[in-house]
Image 1 (tube, helix red, strand yellow):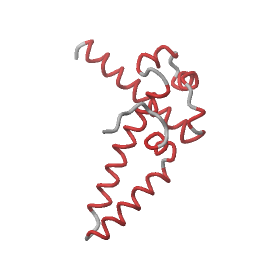
Image 2: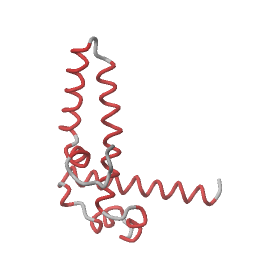
Image 3: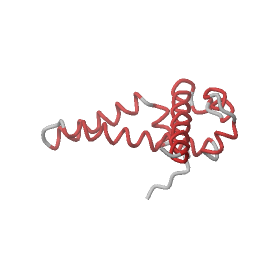
Image 4: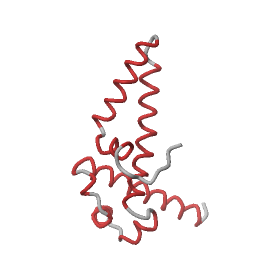
Length: 121
């Protein structure tokens, strides 16, 4: 493995850590508790390292929203594929959607309520 590949893998790992830590903190204490200073302290990196991955909290929220959207899509597909018939699929879809929102309120907020800087179109 080249030095460049190792650096890219380490960078991706730091980025995953930042997003996971932001998500955890938001789920525990709400998005107001998520600050770059607090994240830097929790992941034991400096704030400049955080800013080398994300421009700020808005982009971190966007990354959490994208991760949440992928997770929700998996949950919705699984729920609807197990249902038999259109009515059962719609019911399963609604339950899976609401269940995801209930289990992940901060992620749901990042996806649908907060400005994560993502363009939808």
